[in-house]
Image 1 (tube, rainbow, N blue to C red):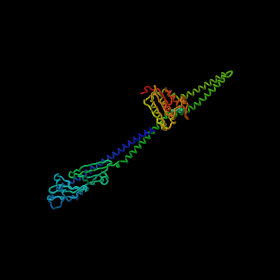
Image 2 (cartoon, rainbow, N blue to C red):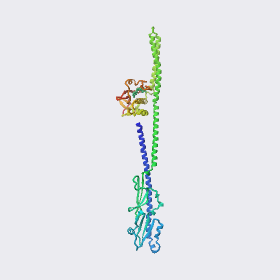
Image 3 (cartoon, rainbow, N blue to C red):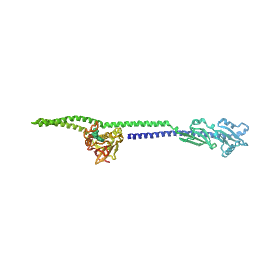
Image 4 (cartoon, helix red, strand yellow):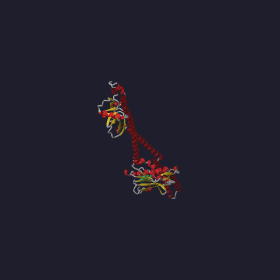
Length: 495
Ligand code: ADP
């Protein structure tokens, strides 16, 4: 149970990391794109507005240049008055003749500044209303333009939809501000999210306005659809992978079980045992009957020696038959075909293989096996036989543990080197082995379990002895049974 949760935990963690990383990347990409678009728009806005204000300088300069012609036609119409007709942002053009004074003192001050700086200067400025004046001092006549900021913006070339664009654009000077386009509502106060800003002075020193653009991208503007799709895709892919892994693991386990042939083998042995019992019964009955007959014939007066001899010959023949039957059983148990296949085997690997094969059995019984293998111990063994012994011992322990409440079941496997041997012990905290059962434990066909064959431990002992080892059983001091399998260490079996 704990193992499967452990496995799941890593999958969930991996999924979370992948989801967060992917979603973060998508959000970042979207923000980068929005920032790039914003910066492009801000640059275009600055260029367009700069072109416009530079045009005002040019208009004033042209008016100043054209003066001699205008002077020569005193009393004629003033050509500069045609400017508001041609340019919608020019609300009016005023002129000051040499002998006149400006009506507005701000124009007088602006003209003085213009004369000092030798370029146009700002007169009255009312950015809130979208108006300002631009004065150029010239001789003999000076000129002043009154400009409408809204009409100055070249809307046909504007890169954004002024009503719906989320970008806010303002023109600022001296604490005053004209809102060219308002941007997304509440943009200025927005504190949550990401804020992009661009601030730059227009390219005309006579009209020192700053053009300010800003864009706030809130959490709501992140690409949630794409991010959600990514998270779902990660979840789906990981679920599919996990499913595939579980399937592969189950298939591998089934293949291993089949390879080991443990279950099939025990069944075969069970059938064999039933057959053997039947076959043995017959010659043994015959041996007894012949021996009794010989006894009777020898007791006769005179004793019938020849018939008695015949009966004894019969008894001996039946005895040999019985021995053959037993020999066959032994052969089947001892795997003579595998003799000579002993090789160095890592004990802990045999234990792990058996635990792996019995994982479903452990889970079904709510048992979490503990493996204590501090050192690598390599023994000289037949790997298949070793697997079978460990498998049998663990299965027996699991069966014994069924008699304990589910929460208290303990199964401990220990691998260590002990007195020149490698030792694998399987300890459980089941009911233990009653004293009267202990001496008979390794007898073939001895079983206390309903439907038990009583062949498991006897087979294990035979296999252990076949590898030059030994199998022993005992009760643990604090309850439960301990089975110890000792096998000779392989050369260099200890690290
Ligand atoms: P069976 O298949 O009948 O269980 P085994 O040879 O495997 O045959 O075991 C023989 C007997 O040994 C069992 O019936 C049981 O009484 C006893 N035994 C084996 N392992 C344990 C154990 N871990 N705890 C208590 N008794 C055990």
